[in-house]
Amino acid sequence: MAKTRLACVLTLLSTHCYFSALAVVLKSNNESPWTNEFDKIELSCLIESISTTNPRIEWKKITNEGPSYVYFDGKISGDLENRAMIREPATLLITNATRSDTAKYRCEVTASEDQKSVDEVVIDLVVRVKPVVPKCSVPKSVPFGKSAELSCVEEEGFPKSQYQWFKNREEIPDDPKSSLKFFNSSYTLNADSGTLKFIAVRKEDAGEYSCRAKNDAGYSECPPQKMEVYDIDVVGIILGVLVVVMVLVCMTAGICCAYKRGYFSGQKPTGNNYKVPAKGDGVDYVRTEDEGDFRHKSSFVI
Image 1 (cartoon, rainbow, N blue to C red):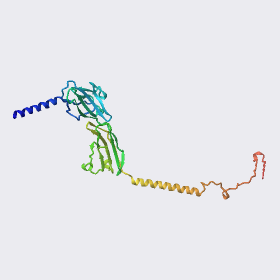
Image 2 (cartoon, one colour):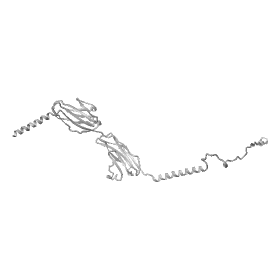
Image 3 (cartoon, helix red, strand yellow):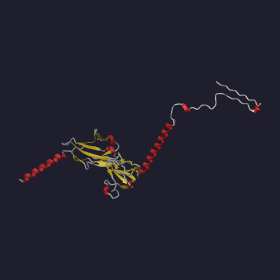
Image 4 (cartoon, rainbow, N blue to C red):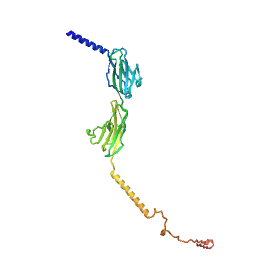
C-alpha cells in the first residue's frame, strides 16, 4: 500500500514538473521602479521557465493614447530609440530617462513550443523631475493690521511640488501656535498651493521671505524678498482732509464774491456806470508865444 502511494506521489510530481516545463512564466524584481530624470533605470523582465529556444520578446509602452512598441523584432523603437537596450534575456535598460518616459510598460514573451505559450508582466515606471526655481510674489509693504498674501508657484517638478516658506532663513511652521517665534502671528500656510496668507499683519511680520519647492527628486528656492509693515497715519490723513476742505471753502467764497461784484456778468455797463466825458465835442487850438503870440481858437460844434 505504501509503495502504491509513493508511486502516485511520484507520478503527480512528475506530471506537475512536466506541465511547468511546457509553460512560459515571467516575473519582475521590481514592478514599480523609479529614477531621477537623466539617470538610468532597469525594467526587469525575467523568464522563470520556458521550453522554446527562441521565444519572441516584445516591450510596449502603455499611455492614454494606447500601447506603442518600444522593442519589436529585435529593435528599440519610438521615444527610446538610442536611449535603451535589451539586457538578456528580456530586461529593458533605459540609459537616459526623461520625464516623458513615465508610463506603464508591458513585457510580453511568446513561446510557440510551450503549452502555455504567452506570458506578460507590467512595469509601472516613474521618472522624477527636480523642481525649477519657483516664482514667488511678496508684497513690498503692507499697512499694519491689514491682510496680505504671498504666493509661490512651480510647475516643472514631478511628482507635484510641495512648498515651504521661510522668514529670515527660518522655516515658517504650518501652525503658528506650534512655535514661540510665530505664536502671535495670524496666518494660514497651504503646502499644496504654496500660498501664505496673513489675516492681519503685525510689526513682527516684517522681514525677508523666501519659498522652497520640493519633491522626491530635490528642491529649488526663490531669492528672499523683503516685506515691510507700516503704520497708517490717521492724524495726518485727517489734517490733509481738513486742509482740502478749507481750500474748497475759500474757493467757493471767492467765486460767490466775484459774482456779486459782477466779474462774471455778461452784460455791458449801463446807467450810473456810464461816465460822461469831461469836455464837449469841441476842439481848441492854441498857438504859443514862440509862434508869434498868435492865438487861434476854433470850435466845431455839431
